[in-house]
Length: 355
Ligand code: SAH
Image 1: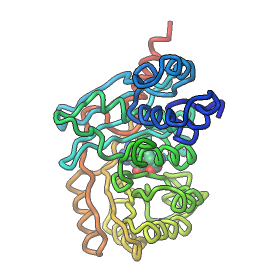
Image 2 (image 1 turned 30 degrees about the vertical axis):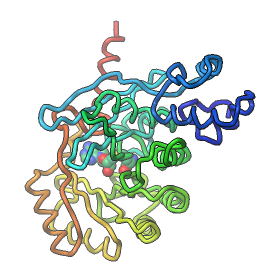
Image 3 (image 1 turned 180 degrees about the vertical axis):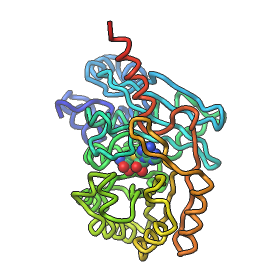
Protein backbone atom coordinates (compact mmCIF):
# COMPACT_ATOMS: atom_id res chain seq x y z
CA UNK A 1 0.00 0.00 0.00
CA UNK A 2 3.06 2.22 0.24
CA UNK A 3 2.75 3.72 -3.20
CA UNK A 4 -1.00 4.01 -3.23
CA UNK A 5 -2.33 7.53 -3.45
CA UNK A 6 -5.10 8.64 -1.13
CA UNK A 7 -7.60 9.40 -3.91
CA UNK A 8 -7.28 5.82 -5.22
CA UNK A 9 -7.99 4.02 -1.96
CA UNK A 10 -11.09 1.94 -1.43
CA UNK A 11 -12.84 1.43 1.89
CA UNK A 12 -10.83 -1.68 2.83
CA UNK A 13 -7.55 0.08 2.12
CA UNK A 14 -8.61 3.10 4.15
CA UNK A 15 -9.68 0.85 7.02
CA UNK A 16 -6.26 -0.81 7.04
CA UNK A 17 -4.47 2.55 6.90
CA UNK A 18 -6.50 4.17 9.66
CA UNK A 19 -6.40 1.09 11.87
CA UNK A 20 -2.61 1.18 11.61
CA UNK A 21 -2.78 4.80 12.77
CA UNK A 22 -4.92 3.77 15.76
CA UNK A 23 -8.05 5.58 14.55
CA UNK A 24 -11.54 4.34 15.49
CA UNK A 25 -13.23 2.09 12.90
CA UNK A 26 -15.86 4.59 11.72
CA UNK A 27 -13.29 7.08 10.42
CA UNK A 28 -12.56 5.04 7.28
CA UNK A 29 -16.15 5.44 6.06
CA UNK A 30 -16.01 9.18 6.71
CA UNK A 31 -12.75 9.61 4.81
CA UNK A 32 -13.99 7.41 1.97
CA UNK A 33 -17.20 9.43 1.59
CA UNK A 34 -15.17 12.65 1.42
CA UNK A 35 -12.75 11.23 -1.12
CA UNK A 36 -15.57 10.10 -3.39
CA UNK A 37 -16.85 13.69 -3.33
CA UNK A 38 -13.44 14.91 -4.43
CA UNK A 39 -12.56 16.53 -1.11
CA UNK A 40 -8.98 17.18 -0.01
CA UNK A 41 -8.00 16.34 3.59
CA UNK A 42 -8.26 19.97 4.75
CA UNK A 43 -11.91 20.00 3.62
CA UNK A 44 -12.85 16.92 5.68
CA UNK A 45 -14.46 19.00 8.39
CA UNK A 46 -15.85 16.18 10.54
CA UNK A 47 -12.36 14.78 11.19
CA UNK A 48 -10.05 15.84 14.02
CA UNK A 49 -7.43 18.32 12.90
CA UNK A 50 -4.53 15.96 13.68
CA UNK A 51 -6.01 13.29 11.39
CA UNK A 52 -6.58 15.82 8.60
CA UNK A 53 -2.96 16.85 8.87
CA UNK A 54 -1.75 13.27 8.82
CA UNK A 55 -3.86 12.56 5.71
CA UNK A 56 -2.53 15.69 4.10
CA UNK A 57 1.00 14.39 4.44
CA UNK A 58 0.15 11.50 2.07
CA UNK A 59 0.40 11.86 -1.71
CA UNK A 60 -3.15 12.59 -2.95
CA UNK A 61 -3.00 11.60 -6.63
CA UNK A 62 -5.60 13.89 -8.13
CA UNK A 63 -5.92 16.24 -11.09
CA UNK A 64 -6.65 19.89 -11.75
CA UNK A 65 -7.99 21.74 -14.77
CA UNK A 66 -5.08 23.11 -16.79
CA UNK A 67 -7.01 24.38 -19.79
CA UNK A 68 -10.58 24.35 -21.03
CA UNK A 69 -12.35 25.05 -24.29
CA UNK A 70 -16.07 25.27 -24.85
CA UNK A 71 -17.66 24.55 -28.19
CA UNK A 72 -19.73 27.44 -29.51
CA UNK A 73 -21.82 24.94 -31.44
CA UNK A 74 -23.03 22.47 -28.84
CA UNK A 75 -21.58 23.47 -25.45
CA UNK A 76 -19.20 20.50 -25.38
CA UNK A 77 -16.33 21.25 -23.01
CA UNK A 78 -12.87 19.93 -23.71
CA UNK A 79 -10.64 19.79 -20.65
CA UNK A 80 -6.93 19.43 -20.40
CA UNK A 81 -6.23 18.03 -16.93
CA UNK A 82 -2.90 18.33 -15.21
CA UNK A 83 -1.72 15.50 -12.98
CA UNK A 84 0.48 16.00 -9.94
CA UNK A 85 3.60 14.99 -11.87
CA UNK A 86 2.88 17.60 -14.56
CA UNK A 87 1.53 15.19 -17.17
CA UNK A 88 -1.43 16.39 -19.21
CA UNK A 89 -4.47 14.34 -20.24
CA UNK A 90 -7.73 15.18 -21.94
CA UNK A 91 -11.36 14.79 -21.01
CA UNK A 92 -14.54 15.88 -22.76
CA UNK A 93 -17.90 16.77 -21.20
CA UNK A 94 -20.79 16.32 -23.62
CA UNK A 95 -24.37 17.44 -23.04
CA UNK A 96 -27.21 15.14 -24.05
CA UNK A 97 -30.91 15.31 -23.35
CA UNK A 98 -30.60 12.56 -20.72
CA UNK A 99 -27.64 14.08 -18.89
CA UNK A 100 -23.96 14.77 -19.30
CA UNK A 101 -21.34 12.30 -20.40
CA UNK A 102 -17.72 12.66 -19.41
CA UNK A 103 -15.20 11.02 -21.70
CA UNK A 104 -12.21 9.96 -19.64
CA UNK A 105 -8.63 9.05 -20.56
CA UNK A 106 -7.08 5.95 -19.01
CA UNK A 107 -3.41 6.45 -19.90
CA UNK A 108 -1.07 9.33 -20.66
CA UNK A 109 -0.63 8.54 -24.35
CA UNK A 110 -1.16 5.01 -25.65
CA UNK A 111 0.99 2.15 -26.93
CA UNK A 112 -1.50 0.45 -29.23
CA UNK A 113 -0.27 2.25 -32.34
CA UNK A 114 -3.54 2.61 -34.29
CA UNK A 115 -2.80 4.36 -37.59
CA UNK A 116 -5.56 6.96 -37.35
CA UNK A 117 -5.18 7.98 -33.72
CA UNK A 118 -3.39 11.03 -32.34
CA UNK A 119 -3.11 9.63 -28.79
CA UNK A 120 -0.57 7.00 -29.70
CA UNK A 121 1.85 9.10 -31.75
CA UNK A 122 4.38 9.36 -28.95
CA UNK A 123 3.66 6.11 -27.16
CA UNK A 124 2.44 5.56 -23.62
CA UNK A 125 3.98 7.71 -20.89
CA UNK A 126 2.21 6.01 -17.97
CA UNK A 127 -1.00 4.48 -16.72
CA UNK A 128 -3.56 6.64 -14.93
CA UNK A 129 -4.49 5.70 -11.39
CA UNK A 130 -8.05 5.14 -10.20
CA UNK A 131 -7.98 8.34 -8.13
CA UNK A 132 -6.84 10.40 -11.10
CA UNK A 133 -9.73 9.13 -13.21
CA UNK A 134 -12.16 9.85 -10.35
CA UNK A 135 -10.63 13.28 -10.04
CA UNK A 136 -11.57 14.13 -13.64
CA UNK A 137 -15.21 13.61 -12.66
CA UNK A 138 -14.82 15.85 -9.62
CA UNK A 139 -13.04 18.57 -11.62
CA UNK A 140 -15.75 18.65 -14.28
CA UNK A 141 -18.51 18.56 -11.66
CA UNK A 142 -17.06 21.47 -9.72
CA UNK A 143 -16.39 23.38 -12.91
CA UNK A 144 -19.88 22.89 -14.37
CA UNK A 145 -22.29 22.69 -11.44
CA UNK A 146 -25.93 22.00 -12.30
CA UNK A 147 -28.38 24.79 -11.50
CA UNK A 148 -30.70 22.37 -9.66
CA UNK A 149 -27.89 20.83 -7.61
CA UNK A 150 -28.15 17.46 -9.38
CA UNK A 151 -25.04 15.59 -10.41
CA UNK A 152 -23.14 17.01 -13.37
CA UNK A 153 -21.66 13.78 -14.66
CA UNK A 154 -24.39 11.19 -15.15
CA UNK A 155 -22.62 9.01 -17.71
CA UNK A 156 -19.02 7.98 -18.23
CA UNK A 157 -17.23 6.67 -21.27
CA UNK A 158 -13.66 5.39 -21.06
CA UNK A 159 -12.90 6.55 -24.57
CA UNK A 160 -10.28 9.19 -24.14
CA UNK A 161 -6.59 8.64 -24.64
CA UNK A 162 -5.18 5.25 -23.79
CA UNK A 163 -6.28 1.65 -23.93
CA UNK A 164 -8.33 0.93 -20.80
CA UNK A 165 -7.70 -2.83 -20.85
CA UNK A 166 -3.95 -2.17 -21.07
CA UNK A 167 -4.34 -0.49 -17.64
CA UNK A 168 -6.54 -3.29 -16.38
CA UNK A 169 -6.15 -3.22 -12.59
CA UNK A 170 -6.49 0.55 -12.24
CA UNK A 171 -9.47 0.68 -14.57
CA UNK A 172 -11.15 -2.13 -12.66
CA UNK A 173 -10.62 -0.32 -9.35
CA UNK A 174 -11.90 2.91 -10.92
CA UNK A 175 -15.05 1.16 -12.19
CA UNK A 176 -15.67 -0.35 -8.77
CA UNK A 177 -15.23 2.98 -7.02
CA UNK A 178 -17.32 4.94 -9.47
CA UNK A 179 -20.20 2.47 -9.49
CA UNK A 180 -20.37 1.31 -5.86
CA UNK A 181 -22.98 3.04 -3.69
CA UNK A 182 -21.81 5.69 -1.20
CA UNK A 183 -19.73 5.87 0.95
CA UNK A 184 -17.50 3.35 -0.83
CA UNK A 185 -18.24 4.69 -4.32
CA UNK A 186 -19.86 7.46 -6.33
CA UNK A 187 -23.04 5.56 -7.11
CA UNK A 188 -23.00 5.92 -10.90
CA UNK A 189 -24.82 2.92 -12.37
CA UNK A 190 -22.78 0.53 -14.56
CA UNK A 191 -25.60 0.96 -17.08
CA UNK A 192 -24.40 4.52 -17.55
CA UNK A 193 -20.78 3.55 -18.11
CA UNK A 194 -19.04 2.41 -21.30
CA UNK A 195 -15.53 1.16 -21.84
CA UNK A 196 -13.93 1.10 -25.25
CA UNK A 197 -11.17 -1.31 -26.26
CA UNK A 198 -9.13 -1.84 -29.40
CA UNK A 199 -9.50 -5.57 -28.74
CA UNK A 200 -7.20 -7.04 -26.06
CA UNK A 201 -8.95 -10.39 -26.11
CA UNK A 202 -7.63 -12.10 -22.93
CA UNK A 203 -8.51 -9.01 -20.93
CA UNK A 204 -12.04 -8.97 -22.39
CA UNK A 205 -12.59 -12.51 -21.09
CA UNK A 206 -11.25 -11.54 -17.67
CA UNK A 207 -13.21 -8.30 -17.62
CA UNK A 208 -16.57 -10.00 -18.15
CA UNK A 209 -15.94 -12.15 -15.06
CA UNK A 210 -14.53 -9.47 -12.78
CA UNK A 211 -15.88 -6.03 -13.64
CA UNK A 212 -19.24 -4.38 -13.08
CA UNK A 213 -21.38 -5.04 -16.15
CA UNK A 214 -20.73 -1.88 -18.12
CA UNK A 215 -21.29 -1.45 -21.86
CA UNK A 216 -18.39 -2.79 -23.88
CA UNK A 217 -17.43 -0.93 -27.04
CA UNK A 218 -15.00 -2.52 -29.44
CA UNK A 219 -13.11 -0.45 -31.98
CA UNK A 220 -13.47 -2.58 -35.08
CA UNK A 221 -12.83 -0.23 -38.01
CA UNK A 222 -12.30 -3.00 -40.59
CA UNK A 223 -14.01 -6.10 -41.92
CA UNK A 224 -11.08 -8.47 -42.46
CA UNK A 225 -7.83 -9.32 -40.71
CA UNK A 226 -5.61 -8.01 -43.45
CA UNK A 227 -6.99 -4.49 -43.48
CA UNK A 228 -7.54 -4.40 -39.70
CA UNK A 229 -3.94 -5.41 -39.06
CA UNK A 230 -2.82 -2.63 -41.35
CA UNK A 231 -4.48 0.11 -39.28
CA UNK A 232 -4.59 -1.58 -35.84
CA UNK A 233 -1.41 -3.46 -34.87
CA UNK A 234 -3.29 -5.20 -32.01
CA UNK A 235 -5.04 -7.27 -34.67
CA UNK A 236 -1.77 -9.03 -35.53
CA UNK A 237 -1.86 -10.46 -32.02
CA UNK A 238 -5.60 -11.05 -31.65
CA UNK A 239 -7.40 -11.45 -34.95
CA UNK A 240 -11.11 -11.25 -35.68
CA UNK A 241 -11.62 -14.98 -35.13
CA UNK A 242 -10.64 -14.46 -31.48
CA UNK A 243 -12.11 -11.01 -30.98
CA UNK A 244 -15.65 -11.63 -32.23
CA UNK A 245 -16.33 -14.71 -30.05
CA UNK A 246 -15.15 -12.72 -27.00
CA UNK A 247 -17.55 -9.91 -27.95
CA UNK A 248 -20.42 -12.37 -28.38
CA UNK A 249 -19.66 -13.96 -25.00
CA UNK A 250 -19.62 -10.52 -23.34
CA UNK A 251 -23.07 -9.74 -24.71
CA UNK A 252 -24.39 -13.10 -23.56
CA UNK A 253 -22.79 -12.99 -20.14
CA UNK A 254 -23.88 -9.44 -19.31
CA UNK A 255 -27.12 -9.26 -21.27
CA UNK A 256 -25.90 -5.96 -22.70
CA UNK A 257 -25.51 -5.08 -26.33
CA UNK A 258 -21.91 -4.77 -27.42
CA UNK A 259 -21.16 -1.64 -29.43
CA UNK A 260 -18.82 -1.85 -32.40
CA UNK A 261 -17.15 1.39 -33.30
CA UNK A 262 -16.38 1.75 -36.95
CA UNK A 263 -14.56 4.84 -38.20
CA UNK A 264 -15.33 5.36 -41.85
CA UNK A 265 -12.13 5.94 -43.80
CA UNK A 266 -12.22 7.22 -47.34
CA UNK A 267 -11.33 4.52 -49.85
CA UNK A 268 -10.65 1.87 -47.21
CA UNK A 269 -13.70 0.52 -45.41
CA UNK A 270 -16.69 2.59 -46.48
CA UNK A 271 -18.08 0.86 -49.61
CA UNK A 272 -21.40 -0.94 -49.94
CA UNK A 273 -19.49 -4.21 -50.13
CA UNK A 274 -17.75 -3.38 -46.84
CA UNK A 275 -21.16 -2.83 -45.25
CA UNK A 276 -22.32 -6.25 -46.44
CA UNK A 277 -19.18 -7.91 -45.11
CA UNK A 278 -19.54 -6.10 -41.80
CA UNK A 279 -23.13 -7.27 -41.45
CA UNK A 280 -22.06 -10.86 -42.18
CA UNK A 281 -19.26 -10.65 -39.63
CA UNK A 282 -21.56 -9.46 -36.85
CA UNK A 283 -24.39 -11.91 -37.50
CA UNK A 284 -25.47 -13.62 -34.30
CA UNK A 285 -23.94 -11.03 -31.96
CA UNK A 286 -26.28 -8.85 -29.90
CA UNK A 287 -24.73 -5.57 -30.96
CA UNK A 288 -25.00 -2.05 -32.29
CA UNK A 289 -22.68 -0.34 -34.76
CA UNK A 290 -21.58 3.19 -33.99
CA UNK A 291 -20.31 4.79 -37.19
CA UNK A 292 -17.75 7.55 -36.78
CA UNK A 293 -16.81 9.75 -39.70
CA UNK A 294 -13.02 9.70 -39.26
CA UNK A 295 -11.60 12.81 -37.70
CA UNK A 296 -8.67 13.56 -39.96
CA UNK A 297 -5.40 13.66 -38.02
CA UNK A 298 -2.93 15.87 -39.81
CA UNK A 299 0.04 13.67 -38.85
CA UNK A 300 -1.56 10.59 -40.42
CA UNK A 301 -2.86 11.52 -43.86
CA UNK A 302 -6.10 9.50 -43.62
CA UNK A 303 -9.35 11.05 -44.80
CA UNK A 304 -12.88 10.63 -43.48
CA UNK A 305 -16.11 10.53 -45.46
CA UNK A 306 -19.04 12.97 -45.47
CA UNK A 307 -21.84 12.62 -42.92
CA UNK A 308 -24.20 12.03 -45.81
CA UNK A 309 -22.18 9.01 -46.95
CA UNK A 310 -21.93 7.80 -43.36
CA UNK A 311 -25.74 7.81 -43.15
CA UNK A 312 -25.89 5.89 -46.40
CA UNK A 313 -23.51 3.29 -44.91
CA UNK A 314 -25.75 3.05 -41.82
CA UNK A 315 -28.70 2.43 -44.15
CA UNK A 316 -26.87 -0.45 -45.84
CA UNK A 317 -26.27 -2.06 -42.43
CA UNK A 318 -29.85 -1.61 -41.25
CA UNK A 319 -31.12 -3.19 -44.47
CA UNK A 320 -29.10 -6.25 -43.48
CA UNK A 321 -30.66 -6.28 -40.02
CA UNK A 322 -27.77 -4.69 -38.15
CA UNK A 323 -28.58 -1.84 -35.78
CA UNK A 324 -26.42 1.15 -36.71
CA UNK A 325 -26.25 4.90 -36.11
CA UNK A 326 -23.86 7.68 -37.03
CA UNK A 327 -22.18 9.22 -34.03
CA UNK A 328 -23.14 12.82 -33.42
CA UNK A 329 -20.26 15.11 -34.09
CA UNK A 330 -19.52 17.07 -30.94
CA UNK A 331 -16.98 19.72 -30.25
CA UNK A 332 -15.53 19.66 -33.77
CA UNK A 333 -14.55 23.30 -33.32
CA UNK A 334 -12.51 22.57 -30.17
CA UNK A 335 -10.37 19.63 -31.30
CA UNK A 336 -12.69 17.11 -29.66
CA UNK A 337 -10.85 14.11 -31.10
CA UNK A 338 -8.58 12.10 -28.84
CA UNK A 339 -5.18 13.51 -28.19
CA UNK A 340 -5.45 16.54 -30.43
CA UNK A 341 -5.65 19.33 -27.83
CA UNK A 342 -2.89 17.76 -25.75
CA UNK A 343 -0.67 17.53 -28.82
CA UNK A 344 -1.20 21.18 -29.66
CA UNK A 345 -0.22 22.22 -26.14
CA UNK A 346 2.83 19.93 -26.07
CA UNK A 347 3.92 21.23 -29.46
CA UNK A 348 3.49 24.81 -28.29
CA UNK A 349 5.52 24.02 -25.15
CA UNK A 350 8.28 22.51 -27.29
CA UNK A 351 8.29 25.67 -29.36
CA UNK A 352 8.64 27.77 -26.20
CA UNK A 353 11.54 25.61 -24.99
CA UNK A 354 13.56 26.33 -28.08
CA UNK A 355 16.12 29.14 -27.78
N1 SAH B 1 -8.17 2.55 -26.84
C1 SAH B 1 -9.60 2.47 -26.84
C2 SAH B 1 -10.30 3.76 -26.46
C3 SAH B 1 -9.81 5.06 -26.98
S1 SAH B 1 -10.28 5.78 -28.50
C4 SAH B 1 -10.08 1.99 -28.18
O1 SAH B 1 -9.29 1.78 -29.06
O2 SAH B 1 -11.27 1.74 -28.30
C5 SAH B 1 -11.98 5.97 -28.65
C6 SAH B 1 -12.44 5.73 -30.09
O3 SAH B 1 -12.03 6.76 -31.00
C7 SAH B 1 -11.91 4.43 -30.66
O4 SAH B 1 -12.93 3.76 -31.34
C8 SAH B 1 -10.85 4.92 -31.62
O5 SAH B 1 -10.57 3.94 -32.56
C9 SAH B 1 -11.51 6.16 -32.16
N2 SAH B 1 -10.60 7.10 -32.83
C10 SAH B 1 -9.31 7.37 -32.58
N3 SAH B 1 -8.84 8.29 -33.44
C11 SAH B 1 -9.87 8.61 -34.24
C12 SAH B 1 -10.01 9.50 -35.34
N4 SAH B 1 -9.00 10.23 -35.78
N5 SAH B 1 -11.21 9.58 -35.92
C13 SAH B 1 -12.26 8.82 -35.48
N6 SAH B 1 -12.18 7.98 -34.47
C14 SAH B 1 -11.00 7.86 -33.86
